[in-house]
Image (cartoon, rainbow, N blue to C red; front, side, top):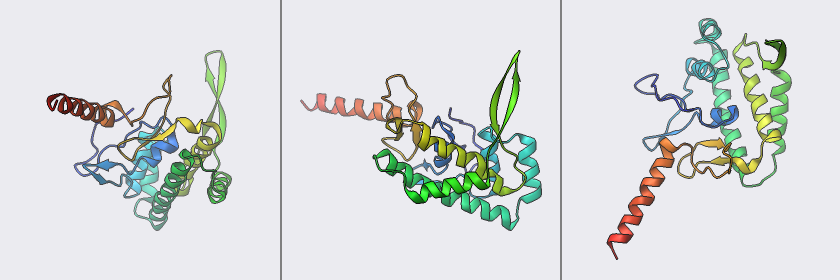
Length: 209
């Protein structure tokens, strides 16, 4: 679901329309007014994205910000996040074309999942219970845990034929529609523009007859 509220005059709100966490993370460098825009310029923005994604609550994000904001460790982690995001983007594009998962990607994800593992716990659900993943973010590097887990699930569990890049922009998504024919990031964004452009083309063809 996309969010239309803006966090600041300079940086638009992230778009959660990929239907998969790793894809939403890749989508943190979208096109805005025709220009690629970085949504994770610093550690504070990274924490805000984690909070908006439902990975951290406000208290957890505030604690990390208070303890680590402005530190070398936080800056290095944020930069490493952006670098891994771009490597993941290249791998996803190749994977969508039918290429195999690169050994370097496999090794990187395995290392991240080993060093920053997700944990499991039981949650009461009426008279029964359910099992859920969770992670304890005490240091900036712990933020890699859910992203590595999600990227691993992307390549291991999802149908690659339903993972696509939008026809008109840089955003990626996992198509959960029944017919599997989604071709744009969202109807409100690129889908509507495509329909308007197609309508205009039909009108021009009709008037020039």
